[in-house]
Image 1 (cartoon, rainbow, N blue to C red):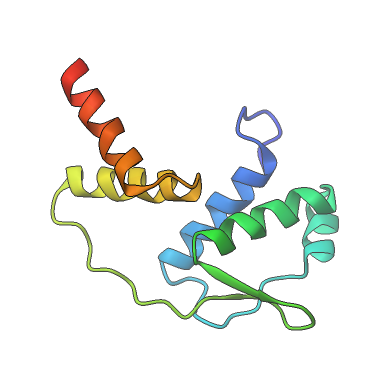
Image 2 (tube, rainbow, N blue to C red):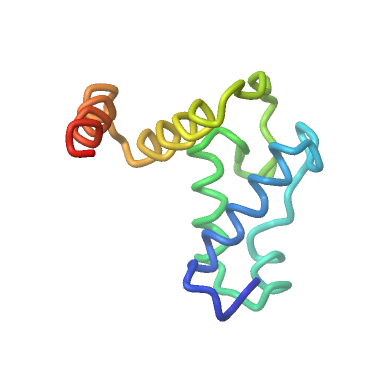
Length: 117
């Protein structure tokens, strides 16, 4: 945790865990530490860690079950993007969907940016 970073603590946790999951360092079905334990270990509020876990669940990287804890999701890893533009598009669409944007909203935003630039 970087306490001097402008990035909120929950986002730092989310990003670090997402990186470990997508790189295979945390394998499928691996159990993550309980929210309370990780919060205590990091000296953070329970709600901060809970939010990071919720964000990971929304992204499909983890699954949570009452009494079963939070585990790395079984996921099929997509083939690496062939072009950096495809990598950027993937990140944009993932973030937009996390915000609840529809396909039409995503496309409209891209069209506006292309016309403006």
